Length: 330
Image: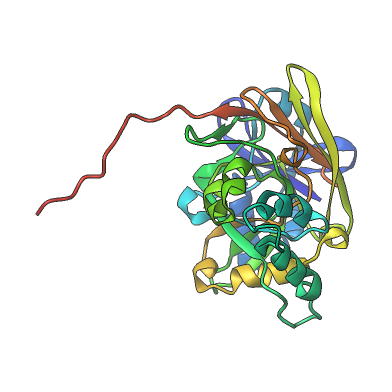
């Protein structure tokens, strides 16, 4: 089952449940996935059951898409309480491109990126109940950095690059007892500045502090073990670059449970009511093929079992007026 959030032409918010064959039904008296999840937790039922109980009239996802009325499949009434984070070097093959970026700085020796990847290979899939190797972790931003389907992904005015990263994101809410509840998964474009990261791997944090996009769908239940999709860049109506990508645990060096454990082990990330969007990583980048993106390029990511793509044009934010930090005098 998949859920979508959208706006009617009058601006009112709604949630719909996708059905087989592309049809969808609106959920009665539900304005957000967040509200539906909070209600399901309060009543002790699954998110899918809560959605089925609220099923109402049919809606047309194609019309919603054509009119640009999709919202991200999750958000929070206060964007500061939606945290976007991620883990890297988690997929088989993901170390190759990263290692090339950092090898020159390492003088031809094994890079820290390769060491981190090997740690995942050796200990990233522990037995049930055990704690595995820590992954690389990064912060992307809060809910204000989450871009709606079809909206531009803005690269900061100071950025050296703005490139796609096709990924799966886990979507979570923290219940009133401080326990993480996974709502499902979304297809996403994690969007990074790889030129900055290539300059020095210690600039990874700077390269990741960017907007990110999710596709319209929240996939409920478990993620398939083997997810296969396509990532492409379209320029002036023509495909500039296209490549398949793999995700799901069959193609990862870490288990999802291990990645979740190392994120939610921090008390800060178990604050009741918060939403978390956590990207699980990728092994496929156009940057690794020496593609240089430019304004107007359109990023497209698609993968089954998601039925709707992630599609966003690249834009560049205008430079703000010069400012200066002022000392607050007594």
